[in-house]
Length: 269
Image (tube, rainbow, N blue to C red; front, side, top):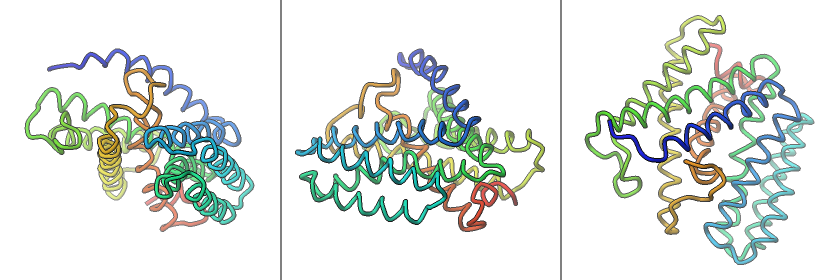
């Protein structure tokens, strides 16, 4: 198996960030929201920097206030107000950033980094378990794809977007992520559910699509990483690309099944 030189940095970063994310999930409430709001700020900044927005300061000020206000609305149990603030903030950032499309997109990306997972955690029943389920699926997918792809190799998944990714890695990642997520839920006393396995496969696949989408974004602007904050990964967006897509899908599934308790709608079948 060929192991990349960045593996050590990836492991060290994971050993630091994973406990922080799990601790924030355990605490819930404002501490959890703040943890992910900071991630949202970082993504907001990285998008603006990569696309070189002409009026970056105004974009960051309005975008940061938008994410903060929307998060506050979620903590107060006012999600529709939060959605309205997010839409207004995206429109304002489009107007002031100098590049309307990317100004709005940056706010949306920042929101995807923090708001869906905050909503899931806010389900006081099993919100924490739903978030950890997401961690298990996405992290399992990343690990499984990395080692399976480097061990087996084979045809490339999307060579123009990400030349190192293979079909074997994608399949292996989906398998590991699904097993990790389903196994975690069962370890907490829930019975085996074919529906939850299917959701694991779907979330894992969407996570990998999120990764490829971010790769396309970086290639369009000629950058290798969106930042350098996380050794072995690059920027916060580089680390959260798949998780953002997975969290959004998980939230939509949960809301579709049980709007008043989306985490329960996601996990209880």
